[in-house]
Image 1 (spheres, rainbow, N blue to C red):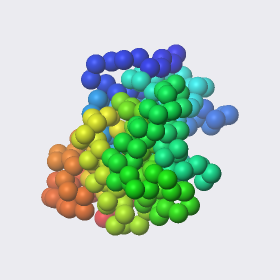
Image 2 (tube, one colour):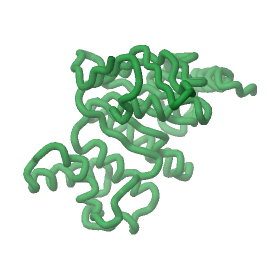
Image 3 (tube, one colour):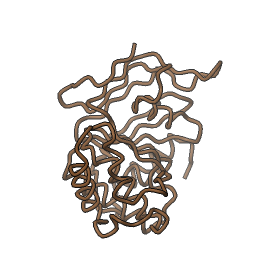
Length: 245
C-alpha cells in the first residue's frame, strides 16, 4: 500500500517496509526511514546499493513498490546534474518549479527572483544556462527546487560534480537556506565527509537494506572544519561501508 501527501506533525517524510524489484532482482528490502520536519538525513552507500531508488520512491517517481510512503506536501528534487533547460533564461528555469501551482505569471516571476536572490544569483536572472559556471548552475537548480517552498527537499548527490572549494560553498549555502526555510532534507551521497558535515542522522544502505544508523553528535559544524566527534563518526561510517583505515 502506498500513501502520498499525508500530513504528519513533525515528520516531513516516512517510508515503511518498502520492497522494490526490477524484474527478478530485489533492489530494496524492507526499507523504513523517517525524515523529521527541519531535519537533515544523509543516506550513504556503495554504488548500486539502492540509494537513488530510495529517493525515487520518496519523490513519488516509483509506483511499483510495496510498503507505505508518507510525505508532507509535494517534495522538491535536485540532482547531481543541474538539468537546466538551455533554451530558457535562468529566471524561467527557476519559475518552472512552479508549473503545477497555477500562479499568475507576475507572481511566478516574483517568486523566481526571490529564490535567485536567496542563492546569490539575483544578477543572473536574465542569463542563459550555458553562460553559468558549474557552481552557479547548481545554485539555479537549488533555487528551482525551493521556489515552491517545499517541506521536503530530496538531494541526489547534488555536489558530486563540483570542485572542492565550490562544494564547500554549496554546503554553506544549503545550510543557510535550511536554517531560513526549515525544510526536511534527504541527502543521497557517496561522500562520508559530506554526510557527517551536513546531517543530523546518517543511514547506511547496503544491498537495498538499511544496515546502520547513527546520530551526528555535533551537526552543522563550519563546512571544511573538523572535530574529534566528526572524525569518530567518519571512521565508524567508513567501517560500516567496508573501508578499513
